[in-house]
Figure (cartoon, rainbow, N blue to C red):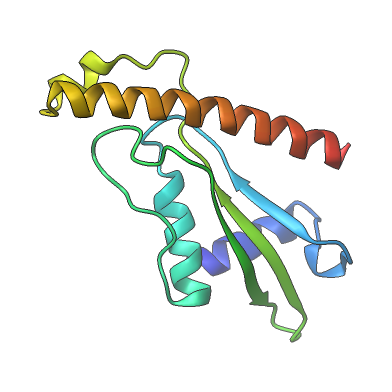
Length: 136
């Protein structure tokens, strides 16, 4: 289902990644708990038979950039595309440890998660900026 959706989307956008010679990095960006890791897992499960990231109902489960190298897909004509899939922490403007306390975490774990999440957001923004400059 995800396979056909992605392939159809690329076709509609008149973007043929199978004709590219360079390596592609496909980054998944968005807000906390927006489904980024779920999507990355689905892509990896469909094409590699394995998961990539852990998911949680508590925001900021992904607190570091996770890169899965060598994801290879084939189109109907047998052409292959190998790319790196990048799952990023959710982009947020405010991360407060008290929000984690409300979700049942103890104070020490909540402060640790908030600190790691803040670092993850900064890393994601920096990674995106570097990637965007490379594409231009």
